[in-house]
Length: 106
Image 1 (spheres, rainbow, N blue to C red):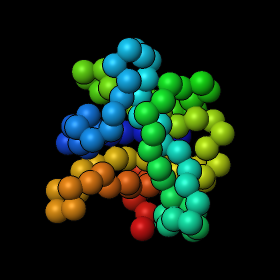
Image 2: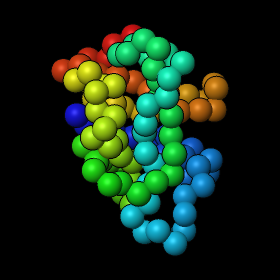
Image 3: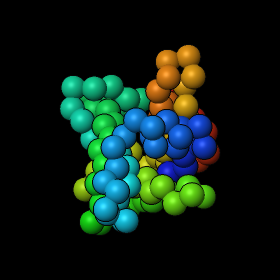
Image 4: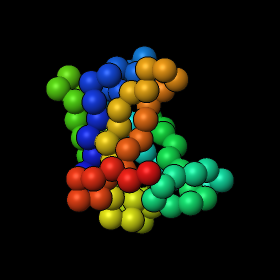
C-alpha cells in the first residue's frame, strides 16, 4: 500500500496535531477506529495519533520531513487500497481518498 499527503493536508496536520518535539522519529499515524464509516470497510474508519512507527507497512514523508505512516497491524483495514490525504477547505479538515489501482472509490 502507498500513502500520499498533499501539502495543504500536511499543513493542517502541522497546525492541529501535537507532535512531540523531542522525538525526531515521531509522525502522524493513521490507525483504525470502530463505529465509524469508510468506503473500504463499513463500520470502521481512520483515526490519527502522533506516534513513533514500530512496524510501518507504509510511510510518506513531506519535503520538510513530516512523517505519515500506517502500522502493519492496521493494514487489513485498507483491503488492498492506497490512501491519499487531501485537504477539504470547506470543512477545514483532512479528506481521505481510497484508491484501487489509481482510481478513487466512494
